[in-house]
Image 1 (tube, helix red, strand yellow):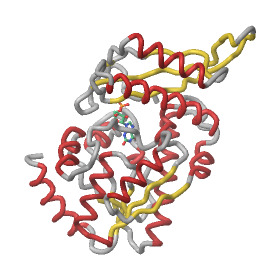
Image 2 (image 1 turned 120 degrees about the vertical axis):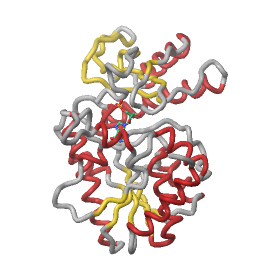
Image 3 (image 1 turned 90 degrees about the vertical axis):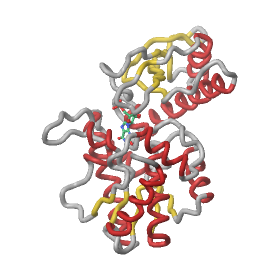
Amino acid sequence: MKSPEGFRQEALARLRTEIPGAAIIAASGGIDSTVAALLTQEAIGERSHALFVDTGLLRAGEVERVSAFFEVSELSFTVIDASDRFFAALKGVVDPEEKRRRIGATFIRLFEEHAQRWQTDRLVQGTIAPDWIESGGALRDTIKTHHNVGGIPADSDLKLVEPLRDLYKDEVRELARHLGVPDADRQPFPGPGLAVRVHGAVTPERVARARAANAVVEAEVDRAIAEGTLKRPWQYFAVLLPVRTVGVMGDNRVHGEAVSIRVVDSIDAMTASAVSLPPEVLRRIAERITRELRGDVTRVLYDVTDKPPATIEWE
Ligand code: XMP
């Protein structure tokens, strides 16, 4: 990207050619799809309509936060409550790639239904370069199938419009700041949501556990940032592991699950380094998670692995 304004002008011209009529936009509330939505709205005005899907796999407070932002941005949007469909699609699935494929397919089927309603076959997505690079292809290994790359069924009539396809995250953030998006440095959140952070079966109960643990990690890291004891990391979240581990509650033995905390720094997510969290922050997170998820989570671990060799998400 030479300059954000140069990119914006070129993207607007391209969008106007690629979208002859109406378009729906897959808007997750993240930076990438938000920037794609704002550019599309600017390019084609009221012929664009953003769809925000509540998959049941979102973080605490996400629906409210995203809806409030879309309203302020005067985006035409609909919130689709599809949690039942996502949980049904994920029932009994433990393989991470299969989870991603099913989530991707469920998204696309929903978008197809809404495309009909808006009388269009154009779907705008905020796909960026690492999404398709890591999703593999003829010459590359599949690190993971991004939900917005690998999940599109061959029989779909939808035509993808991807204005940010060649950009990296740091460039999208620069563009977001240029477009006046608030909080352009907020941490990325994967499209398949908490499903990639709940290892093993993705049930509403286990997702609720991961969501509660994640809210604690976010709150305590945000607090450390506000107190000046920590620089804002690239990403900080909780992962629910598929292990049972013994704990004590009062005089009783309990058998709960384990949570790992993952905090990393990165420039573009292609590589990342594990952040050394202050010990008192780690201890407070562990104490709160085991107290607030009493008996359900009995152990909290800290992941100290860089990318490579690990990836950021555990999958
Ligand atoms: P990994 O785990 O490969 O993740 O090191 C790199 C970055 O990508 C985010 N991520 C996703 N973002 N759709 C997205 O939009 C996805 O399917 C997806 N999977 C991972 C991840 O959170 C990290 O920032």
